[in-house]
Length: 232
Image (cartoon, rainbow, N blue to C red; front, top):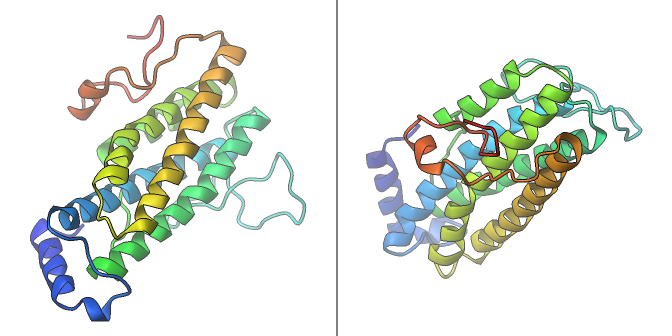
């Protein structure tokens, strides 16, 4: 990962050579904010790729016919994995999220290159590693299904505050970035609602809250599974 000094240098260079870029970098505070936000979001989405691969499984070659058993493409550098989920609706959502977040990663990487001259490659941060570990340890079937709904809901919710910031604090001329953030907000809120409904339908959990325990998680002391009756 680039140091902040390197990022700051890239921002300064971009500010003096805007004619060489597709669009100008953000002005004032928005420049540093956008670089940090987009790098964080790329890393956040990158961890979701592995989470959804564990759910839907991975296929190196796609079947010519779309089917509930089809998997996702494995993340580069990681091995193929069988599907641990057993619910068709869950696997469908996992495949959809995998495709969408791959596209969003590439879009944000393009913005970083075009506006700031930053070539950023995704990495796993500690919260992403914790969520992936829960799903790697969960047993295939019902145990995994419940863990996935709780963990991905929590994972989605953690991006809501930064995305709100993107929609209200990014550079006024960067309409494409704000449009991307609005799309993330709506799609992830819809997914959270769907997963809360599935937790009630499949497991009788009617009070799951993905936002509970946010501060402990930021200090690496909380669970990335959210909160519900009976949870610790």
